[in-house]
Length: 405
Image 1: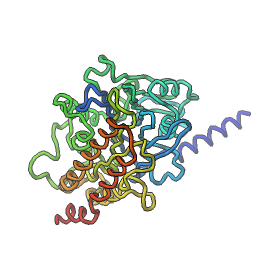
Image 2: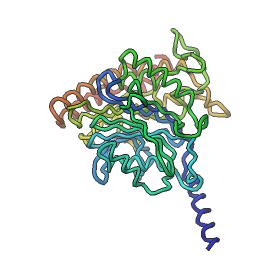
Image 3: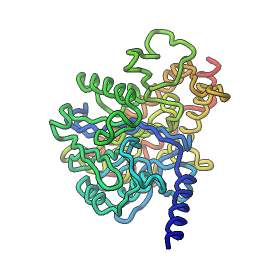
Image 4: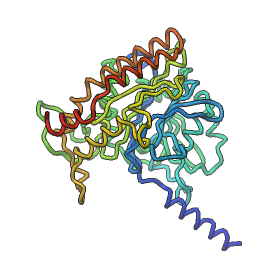
């Protein structure tokens, strides 16, 4: 009997080692409507992952609800979703935590992506998500910070591990005096001074607080000023400040990293608005070398082609970003991947910013039409057609950024 038990745990340990992805590091925020420019809540995930450069937006159907979310393009079974919103206006994302020390992860694979997929298909709101967590079999094989919002105005983080969780309510004036909470790769309820992402947290706190104070918090601001920020709070320096950025820099403790594969902002609805106006903004690939495009759950699979899986599951926005990123990080040997061409990053941002600004303005107009008149298929179809007719040409952008033409 003892031999069988030892064998079982040995097998589970082996499976955990073989299926566990490379270390993940993300930066995120849950922002209530009282802190944003529009009065709508925002859910932000700047995704970092060592396992893939390829992800896209896809519409899926769950046990109770349909939903739209970020999936790994190479995940043929669609086993995991890494951020998304469902037809009831419930939205979720996560960051990995590294300071809650669950024993189960010594022999079981992590399950954050699977849990988010399941929650999107089953939970109508934050209250149901909390019940979902309570009923989950233990040990949960989780060490993560889940950020959630819903159409009822609820917004929270849940720091979750094997046998418990701690909730942080973004609407609580004591827990979130300014109406937002930030998380990177440690949990406030975990082991003090353990975990990862302390400087990235400080970067995000500094940037978001300034935007809150000036009334700028929006999806557009997050993409332009957080997911593409090269400010380092420890150094008090911004690599992109000044007229001409230096050519080379070390990729260390910035929000965008070599491993960054997407930035997602889900904008919820204000009180009285149609839940169908919930908007999913996606920047696919390395955010400094990409641009934002929107999608809506009610539109189903009618998603702008540039962010949907197209040729071999690769979206064109992601292809452009990966091409530019490999020029930004051209050195492959030794520690070369830690050195980046900050001048090319500055050129990429400048070349793609006009496209993003147009696409976000158009998305805002579409969102407002849905909020005011209710959902109509033609609203989203017109937006997607506009994107298709205006999308940047990959070859032209690469030449402009790399060659300078």
